[in-house]
Length: 296
Image (cartoon, rainbow, N blue to C red; front, side, top):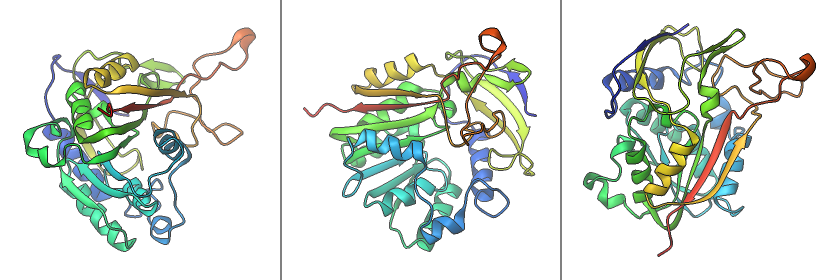
């Protein structure tokens, strides 16, 4: 069980603790000590984008797919989706602030005989002059699941995504719904995270979402962002909203360990009981945001 220590409100760029955490996770994930990343299936070509990720890509490309597109995978981690997007015919550039993550990505890409480009970068700084050569180069900016909770300045993150896009290019963000981020547990119900941004929150604990029992200690900062704050950040960055879809079921537990798989094999977020003591209706767990840079 992680412990929570509330810090003073404020916005900072990527913290040293967060970078150290993701460096450790990059070295650990996909090494055989977790059941989350199936590297043999990835290398053999048996692994494909999960359903929600595939649906997000289809939504963002209006069913046209990514073949022939220039795709920026922002906060790629070790690049499981990066490699699968490349296999679908995209020219993919992976961005991550963790050098270890991109080293692992390059190793996996070589095993999979896939060409990808990697760039070490804080995703909150992509709109800056140091990345100007990449501005306006991408048809699609792709970011999925567990992205913006690590971001202290969501406006800067959205400006970076917008800067990378070609005119008419699109951002697709598949992300944890803020309602799913709020509970520490659902039974008993314990809420320990806000719905809207109120500054930085500090957490300490052990393990990984890929293996809660992993011998990994961490001390990290996280940030809440509501649906409204996320949409408004995209609009303020000059993007137009194409679609916003909220998902009430998922084939995986996005939090790793707080939900129970139901009889149909799907996970749902249910709080309390429904009318007359029946099962509560499911709450949104994830959302997909598609936003577009104006063509002119």
